[in-house]
Image (cartoon, rainbow, N blue to C red):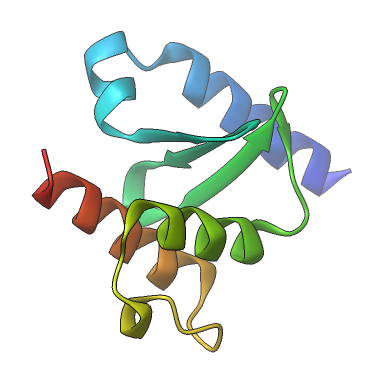
Length: 93
């Protein structure tokens, strides 16, 4: 029940973000949307639903975007890989 409430809160948070903030804090990859949430949390959704294999998708998205391999170490946390992905994307704008 706690997980459902947490996911609902994240969904509301994503829906409330304005379009400019959202464009800076989201990245589309295939059918997935990668969200950088407040406090550095990372969320990967497909059709608005949280996916279970976030780390794999982040690594694939990073490889596709050109993020250096050293920043996509599978031993990193989802947060670390997501942080590297968004930092790289921000630097290439």
